[in-house]
Image 1 (cartoon, protein in one colour):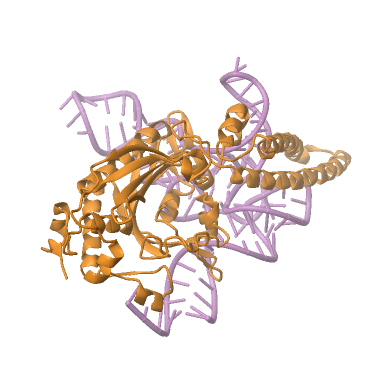
Image 2 (cartoon, helix red, strand yellow):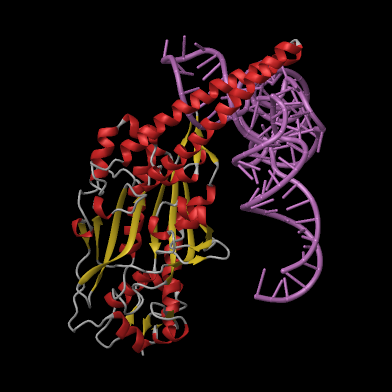
Length: 422
RNA sequence: GGAGGCGUGCCUGAGUGGUUGAAAGGGACGGUCUUGAAAACCGUUAGGCCCUCACGGGUCUCGGGGGUUCGAAUCCCUCCGCCUCCGCCA
C-alpha cells in the first residue's frame, strides 16, 4: 500500500512514475485518494472538536447546578448525534480510500526500464559461456525419464496435470542443490525457517499480490478461509506483522524452505510439459527486512548472492532488469536471473529478486524504531533455489551418452554420487 | 468433533462505571556511586490522527465493531483471535 502523505507531497512525481506502470495520468484514483484523505482529515478534526467539548463538560459535571446539568446534557445529546453522523462518514471515506490505495502499485525505481510488458525487460549482463555440445543436447524431460529422475505421467494419474514426482537420483540431486544453497545463504547470515503453507485471508491480501486473491492464483480453502502460499514469502514476510522492531536488529535476513502452490489460471497451454510450470513446487526463499536507507544495498547483495549460487554451479545465465510494465504490484524493482536451457536454446527464469520498499510493510504494519522515531521497514524477497535450477543443471551437465555429470560443488551433498547414468 | 476459559502497555499482572494511557513487579535504557563491574538508589521506557516552524496542545487506542450512560478497560450485544481439557491423530 502506498503512503497517502507521500502521494500528497509528491503528486506530479507519483503520477508520472505510476504512469509507467499502467496507471494512466487521466486515472482519477490518485487525485480521488487525495480528496478523500483531505475530507477524512476535515471530518476527523470536527469530531475531535466535538469530543473535546464533551470531555471538558464531563469533567465539570459534578460541580454543576441541576439546571446547568440539564442544559449541558441536552447539548451533549445534540453533539453526540452530530458525532455519530461524522463517524459514519469517516468510516465510508476510510474504506474507499484504503481500497483506492490498495489498488495502486508501488512506485517503480529509477533502475527499472520503462516498458509495457515482459517484452521490454532488459538483459543487463550475460555470465559464463554457452555450453557447447558435440552432440544434439536433449531436453531435461527426455533425459529425466530415461534416468528415472522425474515422473509427470504418474503424477497426472494421482494429482492431475502440472504436477510432478522428483525421484531417485533426481531427488538426491534436488536435495543436494538445496543443501548447497542453504550452506551459502546461512553463511551469508540468513536465519533458516520452515514456515506454514496456509495463511489467513487478510495476510494474503496484505502481501499485495492481487492475483493471489479471490482464487485467481492461490488455492483457497473456503471452509477454513485459508490460502495456500504461492511462495515462502507469503508466510515469511508477515512474520513480524504489527511489530515494532529495534533498529539495531536490522536487517533481519530470513530464509524458508516451503512448498509453493499456484493455480496457473492464466497460463493454460503454456509450458505444459515437465516441471517447469507446475501447481506445486518446493522453494528456498529469502526475505529481508531492512532500514529504508539500506534496502538498495541489500538488494544488490541479494542479487550478488543469487549470482554466487548460480555461478558456483557453473551455470550459464543472464540477468535482466524487469520493466515497469512487468513489475508485480508491490515491487519497486525486480531483477530476474535466467539460466540457459540448451535444448530450447533459450534462457528461462530461475531466480527473481524484488525490493518492495515499504509497500508491504505498510499493509502489514511492520515498523522499526530508531532515535528519529518509528518508520516502516523495507521488505525484499529473492529466490534462493527452485527445481527450475535442477532443470538447468540436468540440461547443461548432460553428456553424449545421456548421463549427467554432477557439478563438483554438489558432490559433498550427494552421498558419493558423481554421475547419474542409466 | 465435544466442553470450557481467556484477550490490558516490551513482558508478567492489577484494575468491575468518574483526573486510569492505565497500579505493582520484571526487563531494557540513562544517571549517581565504583579503578571497573555487581548491588543499591534516582530517572526514562507506546503508538495513530490533527493543529504548531517549534515549545506545546487536541483526539483516539485496554482484540475489532456496535450499544447503554453525562461518563466504560470496567455493563450489554456481536464479530475476530488465542488457549485448556476430552476424543482423534502425524
